[in-house]
Length: 103
Image (cartoon, rainbow, N blue to C red; front, side, top):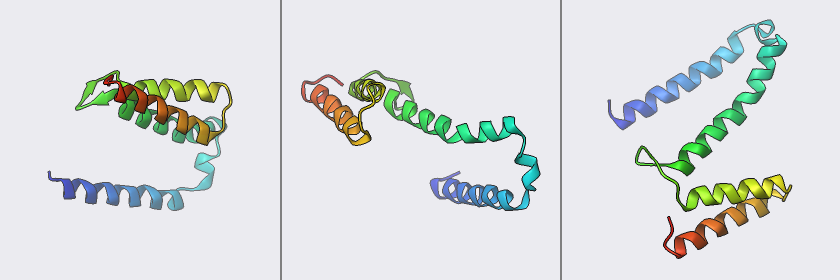
């Protein structure tokens, strides 16, 4: 399977899932446990994406400047810094480590 086939299949699957949202009756999703789970799905997916992008390279686990940037961002979020400050601090931390040849 080549890249374009994968992209087309992903698009068709995405369209089918979106269409299913209109076809499936609302009462199927009204259970409190299911509503809570669907509310947490975006957070879980975004966390997984960040983890994969920050801690892997060529399919292998790697701890480098990106991981330090994530750690700095986590610390800034814990201190309730504004989002732009969090992003800036993470980028600066990763850039400084890369400039020193670490990561």
